[in-house]
Length: 122
Image (tube, rainbow, N blue to C red; front, side, top):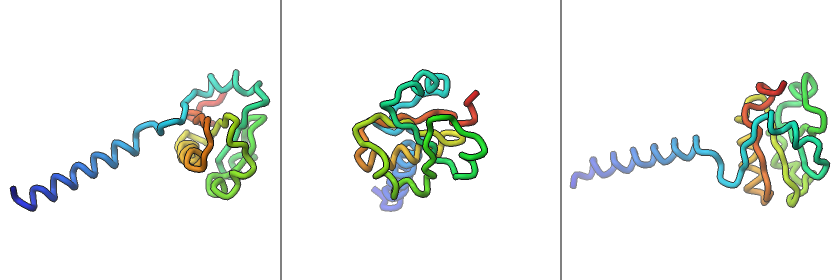
């Protein structure tokens, strides 16, 4: 078999794997809507984190959420309990998904991402 063909095939497979992994939901992270979130907010045993910037948070936020900007999250996970469910929100759902990955890698058991973020909160 031609070496160039093998290399091209491997490159294409790698790119497909990369794109596929990037857009797949993160394993072990639950996804809910903001409508589902409303019933969860009453539970005081759960943790609620908003990973938007401080400015975004102070402009508009959901009562009960603690602001830990995504850029600070890796250094502030000690403020959170690993054995309690944690809900993560941002503006659109992208930063909260990144935050969810960070939390899972740091050993948090139950992480829930809020799809659509504050853009879908009414």
